[in-house]
Image (cartoon, rainbow, N blue to C red; front, side, top):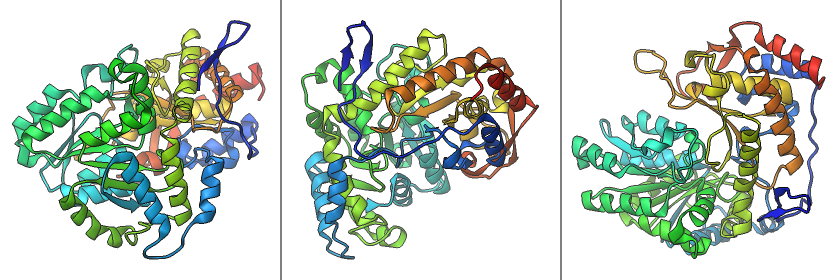
Length: 480
C-alpha cells in the first residue's frame, strides 16, 4: 500500500483491496448513546455493538478476512484426530517461522496460560520490554512477577524515536545479575508493545537480547500477536532491513527466539492462536497440558474452519501491501490530529491511533481514570468505541492501593481492511470537537470493581453530571 499524491497535492493512504461483503452499521442519536453508556456502567467493553458506530475497541478478532480465507474455510477437515486442517496450519507455521513444533490454542491468552504453567514458579521474574494485561495476570497467578526493562524513550509520548518497543539490554542484564539467572522464568519480547502505543522493537535490539539470553542460558519468548505491524516498521525504519523481504525479516526474528506464541485474532485475521518452537523439551511439557486445558493436539480449542483461515492469513501477512494498510491509516489519523493540536502518541505505531489522555484531559488526576473518562466522552459525542489503556487497565496492589499507569492512553484501534478513509475522517472531526470542549469532561469512579482484569468487567459512574453537560453542548453544536 502506498501514499498516493493527488492532483490537489493531498497525500492519502490508498487501500490495496476492495470490499466485496459489507455489513450495515448505524449511528444512534446522542440521547441513546447517553442511555447506552449508563447501561454499560461507563465501561466501553460493556456497550452493545448495536449502539456502536465505529468499533475501535480492538483489532482482536474483528479484522476483515480475505476472499481466500473465506474460501479456505470450506475445505476444513472436521476429524478430531489426524486432521488435514491441522497439518496445513502446522506446515504453514513451519514454513514461515522455521520451527518444528506447533501447538494450537484457542487464542493468545491461552498460550500465555500454558507458558506460565510450564515455566513460572513462585518467586521467579519475567523481564519484558513492556507488559501486557493478560500476560501479567497469568504470570502473577503462577506466583511470578513481571519486571519492565523498557528503554527510556518508551514512555515519551511525543517522540521521533523509531523503536520505542526496544528492550533496555543494560537494564535486562542488571535484573539477571540482581535476581540470578535461575530465578528468571523467561525473557519476554512483545512485538508492537500494546500498552505504550503499538510501538515496535528493532531486529538489531532483538539480536542483542538473544545474545544476552544465550550467555545466561535463558529462554527468550516472543509474543508475536502484533508481529505484522512490527514487520512493517522494521522494513520501513531499520536501515539494514530495507533490502529484505517481509518473509526474510520474519525468519530472522524467528531464528532469534526460543518460543513464538500469537493470537491469531490479530496475527492471521481469524480466531485462534498457537505456540511455535524448536525446543523439544518445552514442546513435550506444553503438549501434556494442551488436551487438559484447550483440546486435542490437532485443534486446541479452535474451530477447524478458523484454522484454515489462519493458515491463509499467516501467508497473507508476508504481503507488504496487506501489513502496511493498518499502520498507514493510523499514521494518517495521527498526523491529521497533530495538525489540529490534539495530543497523540508519536511516532505513529501499529494497532491504532493513541490519544494522550494525560494531556488531553490534564485537569483530571489519574485516580479519576482520565483515559477511561475520555473513552466514555468520545463515545457520547461520536458513537466511536475506543479502549482505555491507563490506570483502569492496571490492578491494585496487595494492600488495595491504586497502581497508577505509566501512560494514560485512549487507543482507537484500526482493524485491518474494515473501515474506509471517510470513517477515519469522521473520527478525526469528532475528536477535534471533543478536544475543543475537553474541560467539560469529568472523572469516573468504580461502583463494581473485580479484582482481576477489572477493565473488562467493572462498572463505573461519573463523579459529577459532566456527561449530561457534554452531550448538551454537543447537541447544541452538531446535533447528532
